[in-house]
Image (tube, rainbow, N blue to C red):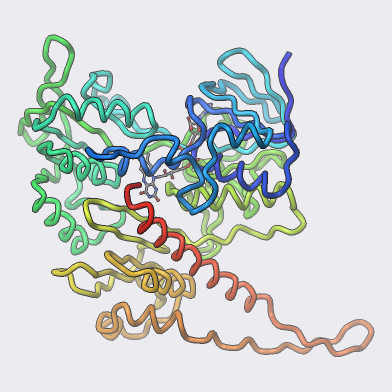
Length: 481
Ligand code: FAD
């Protein structure tokens, strides 16, 4: 025996919340949609966990950051789901899925069947044990992926006031946690194997700005080495961290942020996988027609770069969810997902945004001794990526628009001199009017046609501007998240 729904969302994170909102906007009748989530709470804005949630004063707490407040949309509390007839099956892990028979089996033994499945299982934090180390079970070793982890980190921080924390990993989880720990007056040392922080995105020049800023807040960096072992007391708490370079750091708290792995295991052997995730087409549809995948777990075609990518960022989770629901509910009206990769971070009083791709040659601009600076990435003569710290709404919008347009860059020195003005100018420039094509219909009438790419370009630019607008709003209004 079990329940049956028309639509089932598997996973209850960011993408699930935005998908639910879109389902209701498109008129899903009560009783047809169900969300199954391992987490005991309704979907929430996960980025809040490393920002406002960790603040020492007036920290963000649910229900204030349920989705979809992060994009200035409705806040979906459990009451909202009830009012809309959406079944929330919380605290329930799905342990197997049969995509041919369209059935899920939960850890509580219930079978739930569906007509359409939307996979939004996100990702999990990589554990030290996966690198041959142990210690993850110690109460003062923290990871940060979900609300339970965030509560654990807050408790651990509170019991080590004025003590020493070691942050393992120099990516955005490590950077945001290190900033929050320092704000909580804990002595922080960051340890990572790369030559600088945020190595997957930052250039050495950008990284050195942030590292110096962190150092001014008391954070120390040990680079080019990794954790080799922990020392424990008789209660199993970590007391020190040993590094491969021979150094030993006393520790009251350890935060581990060494990457994530998409939650694909339920679908291995059933769906086509790619880039570590579940491969989908431009409609976010997997290799089985009745199954869609969105958010961190989905590897989708990024039209702008002509490549399949899997992104691990909140904006992509929100927008892919929205697009998938449109494709499910109104397949004939929805086009291909056309996404400009975008992500951001906020630490201390700093705030940056990135658009596009960071391959090719980096050209820096702005005042690296001040508060506004950035970089463009140029590949095959075109601007394909841009980064800006401390921008205004207009500047971020211009950056997004310019990046989507992929303008030709002839002179890198001139680009460096123009700096932000380049994006501001390109984004304001009227796009060349598309040539009018003349074709003859079967009836012999002459038809004047605008080529479709003009529409695509216009829609793309409008989308890019609105992404930047929302991002800026999110940054300013929801600073604590
Ligand atoms: P998730 O939000 O991870 O949701 C997945 C859900 O699926 C979870 O509820 C999980 O419990 C559930 N699930 C998985 N497997 C099962 C199963 N078998 N049965 C039932 N339920 C299951 N991005 C940015 O761009 N900027 C930021 O500043 C930023 N900050 C972040 C800070 C933190 C602390 C974290 C963890 C992430 C941050 N991100 C940020 C990334 C962003 O939050 C993710 O990209 C986004 O959450 C992905 O959404 P999702 O719905 O795909 O997955």
